[in-house]
Amino acid sequence: MDHQIKTTAIIGMGALGMLYASQISSVLGSDAVYFLADQKRIERYKKMTFTINGIPWSFPIKAPVDADPADLIIIAVKYSTLPSALETMKHAVGPDTTIISVMNGIDSEAIAGNHFGDEKVLYCIAQGMDAMKFDSNLTYTRSGELCLGTRIKGQEHRLRALTRYFDSAGIAYRTENDILKRLWGKFMLNVGINQTCLAYEANYAQALTPGRIYDTLIGAMREVISLSQKEGINLAESDLESYIELLKTLSPEGVPSMRQDGIARRPSEVEMFSGTIRRLAAKHGLSVPVNDMLYEKIKELEASY
Image (cartoon, rainbow, N blue to C red):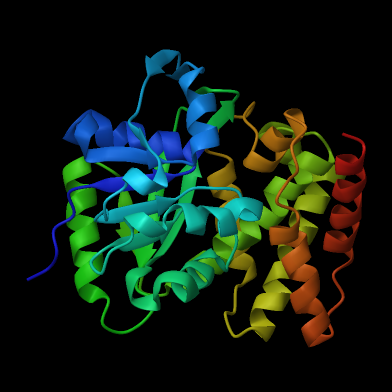
């Protein structure tokens, strides 16, 4: 019999962490979900008032030593803090715990799987949301969907339990037969839109307007297509076009997570995007001039903070 998911722990009180915590809490009750955080963050959070679309929200927060094994853990942290997040959540991981990551990039699942066991970690891609969080205030008009899939054989029961749980919580999802292609497709989108909006201090509307910014967006994405073909994933121009159409559904004045980092003068996830592209391109002997430019431009921007 499939293990039933009842309790969810979320690590990372960013835009997506708060988005999914509020959805689960609204439908299944506040006891169904809690955040995991170290004591330093807990003390800081106690002094803050969190809002979602202008409405005050509060969530249970547990320190690692107080956490029992959760049925589901959602990792929703920045790439640079993933190692410390895995340490923070270790007490909440039991033999039946299922782990998903709503982080960007293409390797957080493998990193978590190496840490806790590949059998516990399913593939998950968050897409189509326009959530923005500044300070302790989250705003969004589109909650998007999660794309789900297995990583190894024998995980089908975990995927069934997860989809039943999301049905009960009212969280939109779809299951993917070719989840790796979907993962790389979202990576392609983020390499383009996240980095371009940060480098040019642009919103979605500005990034989609024909001109230099748009050309950079498309150029960065096309370099991912070339790299994916070397990696056996085989993205195509049609995939790029479908993601551009997805961008057009988001709030024109909205900005992606890396631009939000820039506004807050925080370090970005550039290493997860063009940093990864540059490393993989070097392995295959590919030239990636657009991502090289974005990497250098963003590094210069961060150095000015």
